[in-house]
Image: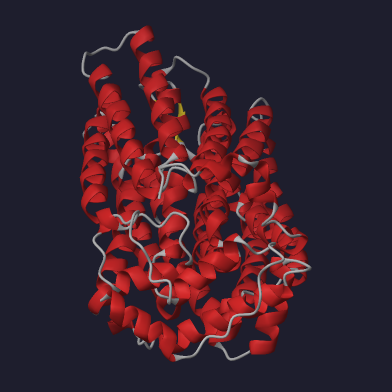
Length: 532
């Protein structure tokens, strides 16, 4: 398999897969991700607003300004992950039992409740209400994280799976750009409206998504796992488009037989048995490095840190970051199905580590000059550029495509838990690493996170498989065959296997030569025994 497939540069490579129903489904769930960016970036920006600091902060004689206490800043950016963890588990359970659409609808209604709590904190002027509102809002975000990438991975064909699942990161970038542009504008308002207006926008996206979600098809794979075969066929036919009815029927039969052949019963113990142990390890590893490599520093504390340097307008930086996120996310998701997962992970880890190490080195001489401070900000933006183009979209794609079908919800739930625990630890400790009365490392935290980036590079080389262009059933067959991670790219799937047949159907779904396939329940088992 070549590093970059030639046909992926042809616009028809993408347009032939995007039927109107698939485009609608992907569009609605992608828009739902905007609210995640709204929360993350709105709080990142408003924490640096003077009216916000005056309302919820304390007077600092040394800085001659109101500042948020270190303990409150730490709680505001770390306790939210209690809600995040709860949401990931609640969302995964609802998704597993009641469907992907029901989860998206439920989480949208919940977001409207938490938006009300946040907005009314501007009336009560109670910083603890604000904290509680943000923690509860993260239940919505956790539900989204455990559902949206899974839904995307189940409805899109293999050749564009990286593009669409990775678009989760692009949605964060677009949402962040919108909210940071608004915050840049409202930051000049000298009263509490400066931060209350951005919070009021939290109503818009959930209202739209709760209304639109019933117009998109439920995941055919989820319907098959719940023995709703007729609905599954109808939905897959809608997703694959008019004229592909026979191909959709053949693909559905192949998926059904593959599910029958899976030996996993979907228990928690199965996550750590046999070939699933490797798959679980991949999801856990990606989830850990996704949060431990420095994105919390640039994404959550970037505006506060830049404000402390006193060299650049922090809101200009947040808008710049959002612009970078949007542009580089688009580049990243376009490359996911062209370059592949492993090369992007290793290139991204290496360059992120270098940028952070340089940032740390620039902060060693004290006091830092104006030009050095600008260099520190530049390295933070360089890190952001590489992270969002590589590691960011890779996490959502890998966690959704790696698990076995019957274990996907549980594996994603476990990965989300590791993600949340890691980001909680990083978010809670970072204020004490950055400022007094803690270690006061300032930009030298780059040495810590840069080192973790290089660990991610080593881990990726030895443990991360290449799943570019593979159907979910091909992924299953390769893990069952215990293919070493470094050999996934060039591994030849048995022509008799389900995975190979589904991959051909997904790649040639608009080819009029496709005819219905007849697959016997023993075909997959025999093919897998041959591979093993």
